Length: 231
Length: 231
Image: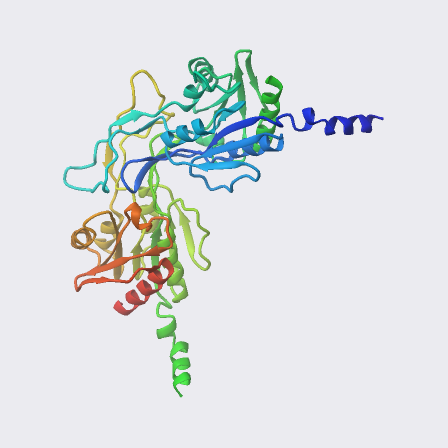
């Protein structure tokens, strides 16, 4: 009797595949910002968490578009993958992937890019090191969360911090207009960037929930289950 | 008769394995220079050419130490591999690998690093983008080529240029004190950085030799044969 009930429940698509018919946009990995034809700025994001989220969303039945910076990971099966380099390219690809029901921005997007990208390789010379002027990159999370016509029903941002993790995430939630912020500590000692496990704090208007340290795959499945429940 | 002669020649270690008993140090890949705990400066070098050279040197019978920056390549078989991140780490590892008969510096070492690496992640704020001051990295090629006690018998540098390739390489040969410069054009349109083929110019006191475009493996074997002949 109990087994039969469980089997019925598992066969119920609302339980096992709660995102059937929904479109989900996920970003993953770092971005690369060119300095000249060979040099760039980037960060240590491996893309493991974002790719795991795209995979979990597809397993939950969603139609998934994954927009990813340069990573050393295979494209997840059953997901449409768009490969980009810079923050501006990532924003363009995300906007092209809208409308969507859910957007989850797990990429570690460069906050700044070099103001004037050199057309030829910068040379070492008697003048000493170059001085680089930076400008702010577009804010993909805020742009989509405040989109006048195509705001997804649910917008989830990530906050990669090395200090004051939860305070910074709370401030980000308000400032960016997102529904959830997934905050994690990416200090080198945590092994989060590049590693296979993650300790995350789910920050929303309801408060903060801290999840026990678990694999990035498990974080991804739990996040997709949480997001599906909030629709 | 001819086949027998060829067979004798191929079995002659001086022909088939000209570097038996020699120690060769090779560098490969980019370096990464930290900006803060998550951000860094790097470049597009894939490490394919440097790794191919280490492999070719091992096939020629040498004892090979490969010092490599972060690359997405397997460690070559039969080679001692030292993984490093920054230019300063690379120099330390190279110095520890000396003495050697031959040194081939194929890595794309960052010319500059950030003067003050931030201990915590730089935050976006009302003050606008940070201004980064740079300082020059140590020059691994010049340091080893001008080493007072451990200069290898033959020192080979690489010049990755996007313009005036040969002129820049000639100037580099003189300035750095190396015996050979392998110059290549790494402009994006050439596909050299990241690609499998390379067009190189061998610059020495004798002049400039331009090799036909060929695979990086073939460039590596030809370079090792050339170097072995010059010992």
